[in-house]
Structures are given as structure tokens and as C-alpha cells.
Image 1 (spheres, helix red, strand yellow):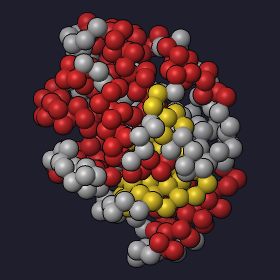
Image 2 (cartoon, rainbow, N blue to C red):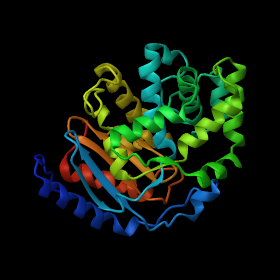
Image 3 (cartoon, rainbow, N blue to C red):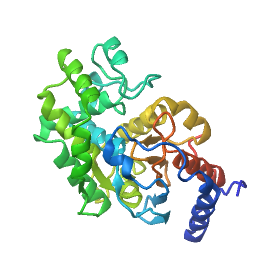
Length: 314
């Protein structure tokens, strides 16, 4: 399997690679810890695994539980920030940066040091800024995000998992602290409780690897949506991919770039989204997490896929 396959255009070749990847990482499925600080996520079966590839043309290849919905958590940050960037344009970068962080994704220390400006949109504080901007534009952040995800994936049943949202509401003190700190610096325009509620519901959306991969194809289509309309300029689509590469895997972004070499974003629900420029989008899901909050089997699967295919930005 380690022989690089540089020309993988046939569906049969892709299906074989997915099969081989699944077989190779099988011993890692179930390893790691569930995100038990969100009680509803601690009940997820750790033995589940799904991997999907959505090509630029919209074909989807998958293996395992790739059509089973799960809590997308921080994967939502990619789509929400894309919508905020589309609405605000370059001014969004005055509210949130694009630099990597060596601190945890919910660090108050770094946010205080940076005077309420989150280092990047994929930290919890940065995602709260995206939510705030969407609320200022639309009155809600969840509604336009849900509509976008439904349209791009073709699945009109995508919705918030209420049990997960309620579980997160009961354990959101750290995110509330982040929001209040940013509000004290003038970096939130909407009431903190409303921003928090929208953020919690955004993270509690449930989607499958199949649908998440389809919904992110605008990142490999230069900002163009599934219906052919433009969401982002080519430059801004590139900037999101670049930010994912350096910031998307929490404090392990550098290690992931070294191992896999693809722009990616992880979530504590066990999902990882990875962009393969000019080819498609990968989404993998396995709930067991490492100490940084990244899926153990998911990261290994993406590394195995990259090594087998030679698909990388490097």
C-alpha cells in the first residue's frame, strides 16, 4: 500500500485505496478518549469509523460508517467562517487573526494577551466571532449555516441534535468566559447569551462524512458552490485553506502538516475534514481522541491515504 499511486482517476482505484486504508488503521479504531466533558458525546460508540471522499464533480466514495450522522462540533467552524468571510469581506480579519496557536483551543490566557482578538477562526473564540458576525448580518447564525449545509450536501434533513446542544449548554462556562472577555474588548456586537446559544447549536449539528465532504467542495472549486454560484473569491478560498493548514488541527497543526500535508479541520466529535486541492474533500470520523482533541484513527487514516495516493499540497 505504501507505493505512491499518482494517477487515481478511476472509481475502482479510489475504492481500493479506501478499503486498504480502512484495513491498515483497523487496530486504531476505538483507541483514544471520548469527549466526555460534553456528556452527550461520552455515550457514542468508540468503535465507529467512516471515511468519505467527495470529488470536485460531486462523486462520493466511502467506506465504513461514512453515511452515519455524528456531531460535527468544530468542523462547523470552517463553514461558518466561510459564510462570515463572504458577508464581511476583508474586514473580518480585523476581528480574528490567521495565526497558529500553541495554546489550547479554549485558552483564556492567549485571548487576554491578544486583547480580545482570537488568533484564528478555528479556536473557540474565533468561532464565536464568526457566529457574532453572522448574527449581525442575518439575525441568526444557525439558520444560514444550516441552509448552506443542506444546499451544498443535498441533504435537507441536516439539523441540530437537541440532546447534544442541551448537554453543551450545561457545560459552557469556558466558552462563556471567552465570549465575555471578547465583549469587554468590544469584539462582539451581540449579547453574549445569544452568541453562545447560536454557537452551541452550530456545534450540535449532525452530519455524515458523506455530507460534510460534499458541503466543503467550494474549497476545492475556488469558492464556487454546488449550484455554480460564487460564495468566495478564489483568493479567499485559498486563505481559508491556508488557515486550515496552519491552524485547523489545534496545537497539532504542524505535526499534521508534516504527516499528511493537507489543509484540515478537526472536531471533538471525532470528525476530521481535509481538502485535497483540485481533487476533492476527505472527511473521516472516529470518536476516540488524542490529547489535543483530534481523532486517533481519523488522523492515521488521512496519513495512510496521503501516503498511498501521493495527494498532498507539498
